[in-house]
Amino acid sequence: MSAKDEASGGAPQIGNPGGNPAAQKGLGLAMFAIIIAVFMAILDTSIVNVAIPKMMAVYGVSQNEIEWVVTAYSLVSGALIPVTGYLGDRFGYKKMFLIANVLFTIGSALCGIAWSNDSMILFRIFQAVGGGALMPISMAMIFRMFPPERRGMAMGLFGVAIMFAPATGPTLSGYIVEYLDWRLIFTINVPIGIFDFFLALAVLKEFKAPTFKKFDFWGFITSSTGLASLLYGVGKVAEKGWTDSEVLIFVGIGSLCLVLFVVIELLIDNPMLDLSLLKNFTFTLSLVLSSIATIIMMGVLFLLPVFLQNLSGLSAVQTGLILLPQSLMVGVMMPIAGALFDKIGARIIGFLGMLITGWSLFLTAQLDVNTSYSTIIIWLVIRAIGMGLMMMPIQTAGMNTVPMMKMGQGTALSNTVRQISASFGIAWLSLLFAQRKDFHAASLSEEMNMFHAPVADGFAKLVNQYVAMGQSAVQAQANAIGYLSGQVQLNSVIQGLDDVFIVTGVLSVASAFLALFLKGKSKGAGGEKVHVMGE
Image 1 (spheres, rainbow, N blue to C red):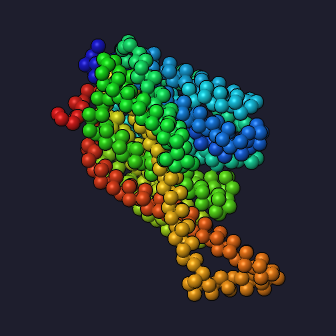
Image 2 (cartoon, rainbow, N blue to C red):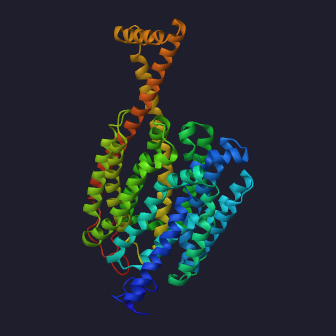
Image 3 (cartoon, rainbow, N blue to C red):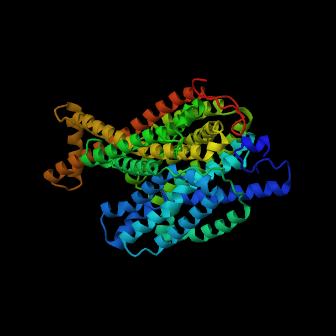
């Protein structure tokens, strides 16, 4: 075996085709096959949400029962991520990619014919087994396919699927539910999955680490149980708060299991996840920055529709159309950011991306009832420029410092952290929004004190307007009180959203300066010296 092969962990290197047109075409088709699969898997985490009311009516179930259709998918896919590195190393990444694709496609077909809520939940679990594995396995394959100097562009293209899928999911789902058969949100994956399977079978190369280490059974049990429990508990925070007994129990079980997992991984010879990777300063910093970016992304992605649908009265399709331009801008920016990363590294790109994202969030914090949709679109496009600039370069900078032999574990650890960050971001920002909304509702209610002359005069004028419309004095007073109460609630919701945007804006600007500590342009894995803390 050559020195180059040893540096790459014995894996064949296809990322340097040397200008061979056939090799370039094969590499492009391989990326296309990976992007299709990841796009489908991520899309199915968000596309179901809009169809929930329709499914409740079809199956005749309550909100609490139907929510497991969404929850089961996210819990299972998140819990399985840590084991993907071992499976890829042990059985081969192409083989595991194909298996995951098949499981996801079959699961999609079964969901499309589900006859009850229970069967839908069962089939969603089956679908999630494949969907949860596709993301980390695909990332590991990309880092083996491309040499370090070309990974920025590759990850930029890969990032289009990651960012575009959740943003387009509600739009696509809304259109399907409103104008077509809601079961198409699942069955549409079947022909695409079949096509992608045969494409991947033909164009993907096999990557398999020369390892036959013993399976870390207790590490798998503690990590999967811990992640599933933690994700479920945190997912309930927005609805029930941190002090709810159910939240405390599941978060407690999850935290305990994850602590046991860390202890096990540090003590055994062949851990499922090599936590010594966290000694790598650049890798750990990239995880921190990626987590913050994910949390920031959740603020707009999940809270802005509250304004657009609940307050502005837009349909899911209309809301999706307003959110669509930012998705298109991300699709434009990510390959550009990838090309820039290959030339200058992640430090400046990450810094500028975080600053632009923060600026856009401070602009969005000016949201009120009079804000035009065109203005909101402009704010979101600016945010998309920032997010598109910094997301993939930051992640790639960290992964480039991971030795090729540990690439599968690195991508598994990175995706595990991303999954937890997304769930925590939704829970934290939803709870922050609820608290700030209640605070502003109380403050505005105090300002409506009838003992204040301006308030009393305004109320009297409002009553007189209702009386002039032919209502009795009692009716007029009741309607005036109802109108003022509605205005309090409306403005408290908007001010609560603005507070969330301010907090995430501050977080983004602070993170911009953290990005300056990223290493400069790195030659990455596959033979370089990995700089770790303490060296």
